[in-house]
Length: 353
Ligand SMILES: [Ca+2]
Ligand SMILES: [Ca+2]
Ligand SMILES: [Ca+2]
Ligand SMILES: [Ca+2]
Image (cartoon, rainbow, N blue to C red):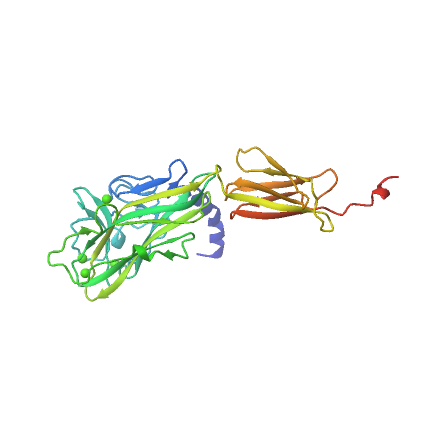
């Protein structure tokens, strides 16, 4: 494809991206958690009962939504976010009890109970060694930021081969740099079971639970959860693994009791502090404007602001003009600092005829 045709396509691609931007695990302060059980439809994540019929951005029955899922490491090629894969390694179908020898991604059926479904994979020499499954989370709340995520999931293992495989968990804010959480590591048993059957890791509750934080996912910001696998020890064929009951719960930081602050100072043209200058703060939400007066050090401060929001700070004085009277401030961290400086005053005498 020529460079020119790329340019021609660009506006259409932008439209498609905009239309698809709401498709992923979307969390809001009023709906802060989701649970993915692979038995039922979860809008923007899975369609119907998962049958490993592949991945698509508009999934059909039995498929997963590729706007939420990315799968890498199978020999048939990587599934990127928004991609489509409906045959081969990424669509090996439902399998009851496991025991396959063909590398690929399956729907494990009838485990841990009848009609149960989970995402299972069989690794091989060129499949999923290494490989990864990534789930995209998006903060769809218009105002509040996600400050931590509680994640839990189940691991099922079929130890039918003489090799050990690992399943590690990591997270990312940009889908590039991932932070591992070694406390969640799992490795399958190396020596094969005599009568192999799928079993769940851990007793009682979820196989793994963790709270990730502090993090800062601003409105429309994304966050990524990743499960990675590869050979760990032993030789021969690989065991089978499955992931199920992925629960994600977000803790939001709202405008009430918010921890952010904007502080600053107002200076004269020659750098002297200016007291008793009115400073006005306008928020991005429906909050009414607030004002402060500078003290005799020229300092002011606004507290209780939501991190992630944008504000406009304005200095007003009948006696001074300012170089930049209005300064927009996005609270990317807990505190931001701004400085207003007045322009040199003309000689008052010369202005009077
Ligand atoms: Ca399930
Ligand atoms: Ca393959
Ligand atoms: Ca197998
Ligand atoms: Ca094994």
